[in-house]
Image (cartoon, rainbow, N blue to C red; front, top):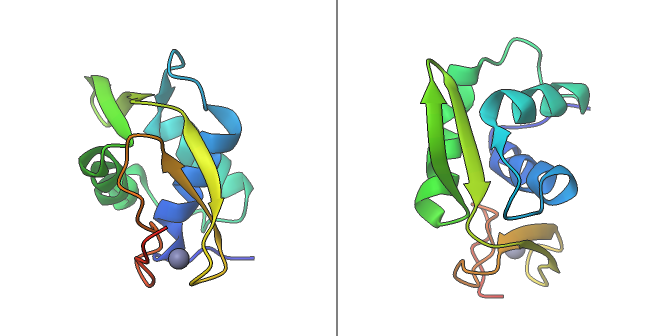
Length: 112
Ligand SMILES: [Zn+2]
């Protein structure tokens, strides 16, 4: 199994939902990258490679950055994440409760 660039942000959302779905929990980009590699993400992908995806999730209003130490960023959720089945692309997607009800699949973007 491999994870495409389109899928990486969706996979990050899924990991947050499964492992860190609590507004009091702190998590890092390093922890999530390691979990993604355990799930089949190419081992050569670096924390710098996934930085734009974390920035996107921050700009989308899913996560907020609370601390930084070199390339390690600590985040918390703005609100809990919900699993939603998108009827347009048929994927299960994960949205924070405060986010706009738009499918986060960049190839879909349907209103949910
Ligand atoms: Zn969709």
